[in-house]
Structures are given as C-alpha cells and as structure tokens.
Image: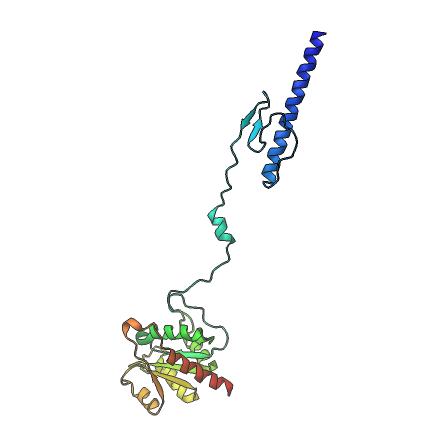
Length: 244
C-alpha cells in the first residue's frame, strides 16, 4: 500500500513538471512570435515570468534565460533597399554622354587644339537645355569624314567657336577649313562665338567679315564656366530656326 502511494505521488509530481515545462515553452514561443502579446491570466506552478524564465527539462526548476539579442541588419542590405540616386557628374567633360544617334540640333565646329575644353563645357550647358549637340569624338580608324558630313548636313544650327586659327587647313582630310567651306557653300545657319581678337586665316576673316557674333574669351582657369547669356543666345537662335 505504501509503495502504491509513493508511485502515485511520483506520477503526480512528474505530471506537474510536464505541465510547468509545456506552459513555459508555450509562453516563450508566444513572446518570440508576438512580443506584444500579454501573459495569460492563469496560475503557474512555478510563479515565474515565462518570457524571462525557462523550466529545466530534468529538474523542473525555473532558470533565468537571457533575452534574445536584437537583430543586426547588414548595412549593405540597407543600401540595396534604398532608392537609387542619380549619378552626378563632376565636370562637363569628365564623363561625356554618348553621341546622339538621330539628327542633331546643334553642331559644334571647333579646333580641338585651341577650344576643345570650351566646346565640351558649351555642349554640357546646351544639353542641360534639352538640346542634342554633336561634338566630334570619333576614334581613330572610323570614317571621320562621313560622320562629320552626315551630322553637319542634318543639323539645324552650327555653332562656330572662332579661335585664332579657326579655318586653318591641316590637310588631314577633315578640318575646320573643310567645315567652313561646306557651311558657306550650303548656306547653313551658324552662330559665331568669337574667342580671339583677330582671325589669322584669311578664309575665316573673309566669311566672318559682316557677321554678328558673341564674344567669349575664357581664361585658362574658367574654361568650364560657360556664361548664361551665351547659352541663352544660342538656344533662342535655335528655337527661332526650328519654328520657321
């Protein structure tokens, strides 16, 4: 009889331990999945806070459990989740856009050894106005003459950067002398930007003798600063031609 009572007592204690363990595990899972969920309002054999304590599977005793560490998000994942920002250019000629494939609005005629930086700055300023500008940058081995001739023929307005030796015949097959002769022969509308006191080449002086021009003489340290009046004048001239 005593053995039966002892076995019954041990079974009762084991059942209470299992109940305590299952209740603690349930509360921990609820707290992890739904942190805002409140503790159930019922008696607990161990009288402990379930999210902070966990019963031992062997002894039934409640031992403190450290709270789970906060989730650490990889900063690179945050960067990938952020909207892409536009890439800013650090200068009008550091990263030049690709040449337009269709007909261009404006053709820049310039001697590269004298006015390339000024031409690139002007191209950048005009493109900010929504104009398609062609500035030759054909690599060696390409058909340079055909490329220039096609864009020069299709453009509405030619902007001539009149440096001191503009119109000089270099004999290279396609130079400002050839461009100037084509402009005069085809009577292409052009806008003259005078960047010197006097043209050295007689052909340039002859063609530009009675032509109105806009003076722009940038210094070496301010080549990339295109004046707004110049850009406005070119844009107005282009839109006037486009409207006719």
